[in-house]
Structure formats: C-alpha cells, structure tokens
Length: 356
Picture (cartoon, rainbow, N blue to C red):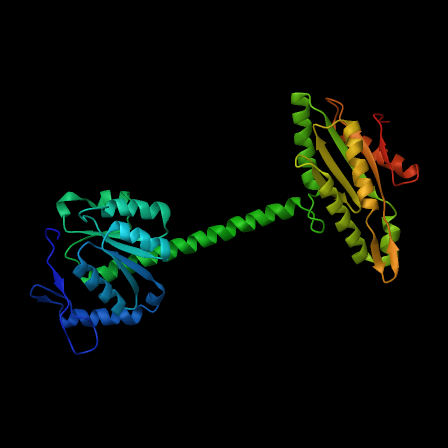
C-alpha cells in the first residue's frame, strides 16, 4: 500500500444511480454526484473509449474502474505493469491510468515509456508520493497528465476529458496531414505521369534525361535512348475508334515495362510516340532491348471488332550519347533513326551515330 493514500471502499447500496465514493469517513457530496451525472449526459462518446487502470492495490483499481464504467467508459484493470502490457497486446486501449510505485516489478514510469514506444495509448500517471516526482519529470517520460492521490472522481473525469480532447485533436491533425501528403503525392504523380498508360510523361522525360546526361558526362558512362513510334496508328484509330486505339497504347506500355531493367525508364512522349532511357548502355546493347520490345509487341493480337484480329508493329530509332554533346542533338538523332526505320518499311530498329 502506498504512503499518503487512504483506502477507498465501495459502500453497499440498494439505490441505483451514481456510485457514492467513500474514503475513510469522506463520502462524495450529493451536489458533486449531480455534477458527475451531468458529465455523464455530456459524455456521449464515452462508450467508444477503452481505459486500462493499473494499480497494485485492487480496491483502488476496482473503485476507479467501477466509477468510469458508471460514466459510460469501457474499462480493464491490471495489478502490475507486466499484466498491463499483456492486456495491451490483446486489446486496443485509448488511455492508461497507472500508479507509479508498484512493488515487486515494473513501475509506472517504466510502463509509460514502454507504452509510448510500442502502443498508441495516452497515459495518465497518479501517485501518492508527491515529494518524489515532479510534473515535468513525468511528462518528459511520455505521460499525458499527472495526478496526486487521493484522486477524486470528478477531477479524474476532467483530466480524462482533456486528454481525450487532445487525443482527438491530434488524431484529426494527423489525418489532415496524411490527406495533405497523399494529395501532394497524387498531384506530383499526376504532374509526371501519363494519365492513360501510367508511364512517365514528356515533362518527366526531360527532367530525367537532363539528369542522366549530367551523370554520364561526370562518370564517363554510356547512355542510350530509344525513340519508338507505333506504325499506322492513325489509320488504326480511324478504322476502329479511339477506345481501341487506347487499348493498343496500353498494351504497348505493358510490353515496354516487361522488357526493361529496374534502372531503365519509359515515357509516353506524345500520341503514339514513346521513349526509353537506358543508363549504362551502349548503342549495340540498346539495339538488343529495342529488338526485344519490337518482337514482343508484334506477338500481341488485337480484336478491335468481332471476328477481326489485327497485329500492330513499332518502328524504333536508337541513339547513343556522345559525351558532351547537347540534349537536342542526342534526341534528334534518335528521332531521325526512328524515321529511317519507317522509311525502310516499318517494323524495324535502326541505330546510327550520324546526325545531319
């Protein structure tokens, strides 16, 4: 039993209603009970709150638990810090009300530290040893509030409501911040991603290719660019409609993804044009990747209308970066090689170092 704490007892009563709390000759006045009943009426959300009371003296646990249950709170109790941790592992608890000095095991400060590290509950600490602890010391350990015994139920309810309000405000703020972060992430994603294919868009392409060129010049690495254009795409769109055309674009985007390494990146450059950046890759190796994409896409069979099957092809230009050349020249060479592939009959890959 703790020094400075009078043993609370629950009087037997046949009359229903507020629980009268007695401490060695002191009975809670009727006026105070009336105030508490008003609190009960105002506490409409109490039934959603789970509280864990921790004290090595069972009568204290019982009286606090019964009083809080009277005002609509769900309550659990534990006679030690170790027992409290086991309960916290099994139950969602919003607030823990704990004594500090509990002989024979973990004390309330140690319990508070573990709760804040591993559980989402707030902690209200109470003690009968006022001279041994300060408010600042307890709060620094993670407690949300600190009370001196003997604890009046009215005071406990006031403290409890304050902690619950702060908890709700913090939860709302965290939720708002999470929504803001998600909105920013979505905005960022939309600003750099093609809405249809979910590949990166041309805006992101120019950001990334600029960074890759800087890295290539700095470390003297290879860098290759693929410029791809779906053959006869306008005619396909005109014949079968834009929805079927979109299906071709989606399938081609999937083929590209499946043919690349994690270090490569693909972009919808515009319309039916796509580009791929291949870091640490020379032109010959880029030809291999481009050819793999061409062959895999040619295997795709489209059914734009019942009974009609169509295969679609792609023409690709490959450009290897010449160190210290400008961005425009590098991209123009890839574009030129792509048009050379078209001129040669389409469904081809062309690689050349020449730039007119």
